[in-house]
Image (cartoon, rainbow, N blue to C red; front, side, top):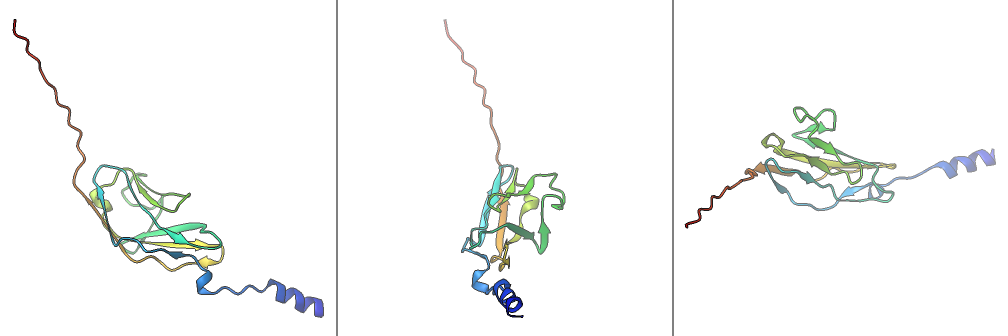
Length: 134
């Protein structure tokens, strides 16, 4: 009986909110240029480290397979948990949050991040003609 009680005490893990991963402060507004690559970062503090990050856009989960209409342009980076746009389009504008997870569980979601995709990246090719006089 003593060994069973000791085993139960040794396997009991207490997890408090301060042990869960949390998102560090970040800007509330991010601006990306349309047709260029960009990313949203989710800076976190966690011990143990973050295992993955879940992103939402306008209260809907974003992942590599369900990002509607993105044709694989939007990916969640497995290394840092960033949301990567290749390239960003006007349809990517919206209200985003990120939620970090560790082996201890789910952390609190970030404050809302307003993503604005504006402008246009255009490559100009200028041809010039040189005239030589005799």
